[in-house]
Amino acid sequence: MTIGERIRHEVREIALVTLYFLGCFLFFLLLKKLMLEEYHLEITIFHTALIGALVVAKVVVLLEKTSFGNQFRSARLFAHVLWRSLCYTAIVFVVTLAERLFHLYREHGDLLRAFSELWAGRDVNHFLAFNLCAVFSFVIYNCFSEIDHHLGEGGLRKLFFTR
Image (cartoon, rainbow, N blue to C red; front, side, top):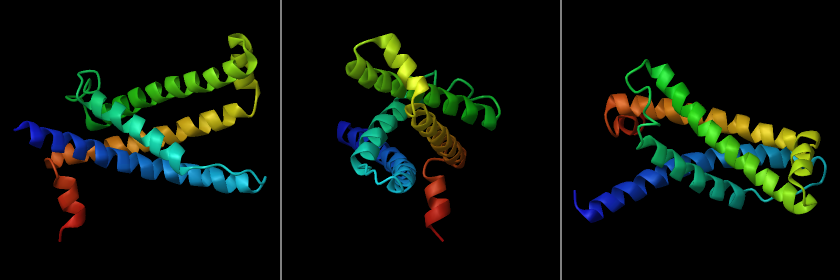
């Protein structure tokens, strides 16, 4: 495989994963936006969803290439899907927790106060809701990824998009 072919393959792989997570995050953020409309609060969702999708897609693609992401490849399919979904969710949980704490720390100037503010405030509900949505997205992604792996590369696409 030439360098150009390898680059095209990597870009295509990341683009497809990014599109999947962009769709998921747009859906979840649209639900959040609709719920906040009741309180006359407006949020922008596209930029948030795009940045989140790009970051998550890159992490997912990198973890799929490591032995850590393929820990239970020889086990039953559900164990492998569950392992990968839990790994991805743990990473997202840590990153979103660090992000929230960073913003609260900048606001309050004290890490302990920022941590207590995170769990005492309304922010914890949004934090947990986002992580629950991430779990759901990862489980679906990993299920379809494993089905595609067992059908052969591109087998799932052929199954859905050809007669």
